[in-house]
Amino acid sequence: MSFEKFLFYVFAAILVFAAVMVITRKNPVHSALFLVLAFFNSAGLWMLAEAEFLAIALVLVYVGAVMVLFLFVVMMLDINIAELRAGFVRNAPVAILVAIAMVIELVIVVGPQRFGLDEVAAPAAKPAGYSNTEELGLALFTQHLYAFEIAAVILLVGIVAAIGLTMRRRPDTKSQDPSRQVTVKAKDRLRVIKMDAEEKA
Amino acid sequence: MDAVIALWTELPVVIQIVMKIVAIMLPLMLLVAYYTYAERKIIGYMQVRMGPNRVGFFGMRLWGLGQPIADAVKLMFKEIIIPTGASKTLFLIAPMLTIGPALAAWAVFPFDAGLVLADVNAGLLYILAMTSLGVYGVIIAGWASNSKYAFLGSIRSAAQIISYEIAMGFALVGVLVAAGSLNLGDIVNAQQGSVFHWFWLPLLPLFLVYFISGVAETNRAPFDVAEGESEIVAGFHVEYSGMTFAVFFLAEYANMILISALSALMFMGGWLSPLPQNWVDGVFLLDDGFQWLLLKTFAFMFLFLWFRATFPRYRYDQIMRLGWKVFIPITIVWIVVVSVMRVAEMPWWFN
Image 1: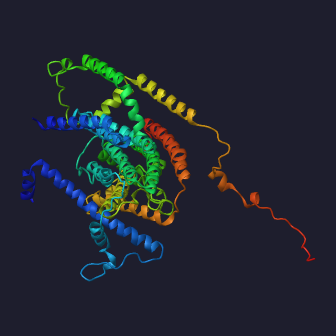
Image 2: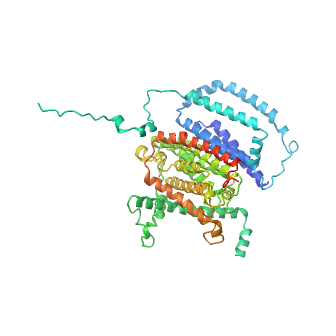
């Protein structure tokens, strides 16, 4: 067994283990952390496939940003496990049916009959100076420019929609505006009045 | 000499790599230890105090140079207390998750022309990915401690680090556009010429945003609300003691050194000499070399300490305002400016 193959099996085994733990842990924070581990190992697998840009982008975007926000929310939730359990038995038959249907569909689409060296030839090893990032950038900005830009616009619409949905005007908050704070002059706040001295009665 | 090289090439590759890693890690750890000493001493002088000056070697005081060693020994022998109700495994994993990425990022760092452990094409992306992982240690530490103060600290820190990471990432996009490469060595080579060819000048706003975001990213004063002694005791590491605390401490300083070194590399010409090339060609110590990178890194490391001694802590809403409403717009505008300069092949830098 070559070293690459050994690495592949190590990453794949940890990936499957972590994925199983994600759906079996009771504590949602533990689940989220196992999901992080799963992402990390899939990044390792992509690295083995010489797709270093995708691998690093996965760590950067999903592990470094998305999962942090996810953890952020999950940590603050107060999840009642007994309540979750109560629904489990009732919904189990439907869930099992859906799971079986999905497994069958997946096997039909990406089953073992579609893979293997006789179906797909092993890609030739790339020369030493080959930059996956550069190739990906060139393809994205020439061949697939429209698809790339449409995806960007959809994301932008998503951002605007999310902000639009959550923003609300709250006139009663007492938040401070630093730019107004620093422009305040003594004259705006304080009035000096001249008055005659009071005489003691 | 030839015998040594012959012996080196005889060694198995794994041993060679391990020895290279040790050659980077040992000086780094020593630098971290003496950075804490420098911090106490420099801030001491800035506040008209002496700083640590008792612990020396062999009965001599030597300006307190033995202090970091004494601190390390003390922390190693202290008891590690695990709070009741803490998630034990995560509580112990958290410090490791903080220091791991801080050290792993050095793998792609070039110390001199060609002197790098792993010369990868996507070096800049790798650095960005590694620095974005440091936040996990903080979040997990806060959550696993089962303590309100620790949890508040970790929540603050997570929000802060994510906000500033965006500004930092955009600043690096500017560097990438200017240099036309993700390889850190190529980025330095793209700055060749003179002091005015270094990227600090064409990318001045990005340079300032990057360094300030770096200070925020490492949770250092004036952005150290994650610790906030006066409000939440010591933030995310309030429950940590002994070696587990020491590891957080080491990671913080290792991250500061990393940010300083990266600023020197990407905006200050790395190992390039600031003196005109025809003066220093072949002159020992004045020519391009590691010593210049070290000098520039030390200058940035000094800035971290200077900030801490000078500025009061930011208020939390102002930190968020600075990150989202000031830094991110600045970086986006300047990326456009840099791209235009690049396409127009502006003389001096991009022709």
